[in-house]
Image (cartoon, rainbow, N blue to C red; front, side, top):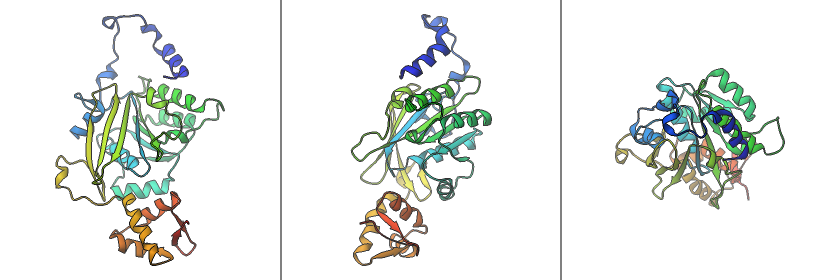
Length: 302
């Protein structure tokens, strides 16, 4: 835990210091949980009890394009279906792209926000009485209050928000890994939060989400299949027809340049057998693989 976060803890909970457990009255909020209704998913966050603690924080780590945002958008949607107030706050993907992703996933109950100032985010979450929020991503969060130790300041704000028992809030934060497997930006948040989730892409295209740390439950992993409507949370994943995730299309798209200098959406859609190739092409453009021409055609970047 950072020094700033530790000082904040001492200020908030110092009155309980040096007491034995029988003399510490645990607030009722610690016996409550936000539930999705999907047993294995709730166990991933809350162990045997299941569900997400209303005053908690977690991270999700994985390589770019592995499906972190998709998973968390669907996770929020399930909570929203059960009456929770949720929000997905992005400082990376513009709101129009997020909206397109939600429409593809059939999600219409998750408020989407483009915002990167942690102080403004804090004020908005309190005002709207949000119960579960996702911050995408941690390295992109900023503040105008200080120019020194910005990551530590952001951590303290997250801890402040998730320690307010009068206005309970759970916050999930997305972290990215480089191709070398190291964190982009500070990794201090992994030590501060209650739960660390890691997302892996298997050789057969499935996703494994596991907890490497969980203060509110035991360590668990969940294997899921990605379909054209996002993750399938059925209890019989073997019966679900698997499809290729957009990131797996990259090699197919690049092979098209063996026969042509530029490609368009229709050609790519026909080659991949998908109705909306724009998402794949835009993702490849963002990763520096393609360049979009004014004629709405794409060429290789090198």
